[in-house]
Length: 345
Figure (cartoon, helix red, strand yellow):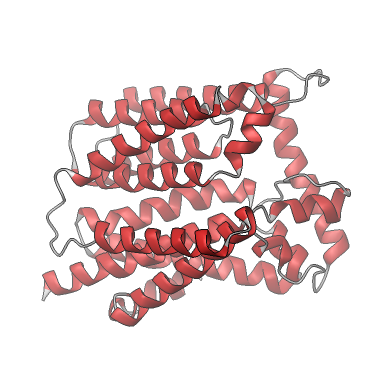
């Protein structure tokens, strides 16, 4: 999949037709997810249209010169909105199970994270003030960890490390600081969420969760080999397709992590595993090819998002929302690929 992605011609990815296709798929997916979540087709289609319009306007740059103000504005808007969201909820989801459930299914969570990571990727791909970037990543990781989920803060810190590595800005001090911060967030967020009747300490909880995901995958392979069972519902049922895994494997309505290949295997067996690996391989291959051929901030953004979140999805698996996120990455490839092509010629 990765080799195929590297060989895909940039003129195909950056074509106007490909841009329209990704926008249409994003619109349909967002509309469907919001409709299933709020039982309002009007609200769903309005949200999908607003998101696509925002993408079209926000990615309207026609130059390889990085935007000076928009990335920081996006970061600030994201963090302010997230802080107001905590006030609206009346507490911190990390310490309250009911609030965490509300935050998990809220469009505000998705909006804040997508806004932040895009703005932060643009900053970390073009700016050289290492301390400022580390501060933004630390602040963002802290606020997003208050939602009670490890995914967002881990994604932010991985983006920081990868960007510094590719740009030659990574030093020992930053590596140690980010590594400690990453471990602390993963351990604390994972431990605070556990039921009070558990007797595991923080480190035991971390290893238990990793083992549980692998055990779930083992059960899936036993039940769904070789051609799958659920025919797409474990991967593509909005808003929380991972609950299908919990229902089928354990018999209760709970969002279950099953690794990157768990849900595809439950859906389509060996064919599902092959398809998801090809899909992510192509996505990473296209991003790496653009990064390797062009020394530019906009050639780095898509690959940073693809590589960092592919690492996270190895453990958590892909749900409906993350499929939409991958469409966003393909749209970035298309928009910025067009800039790279025209600027080179």
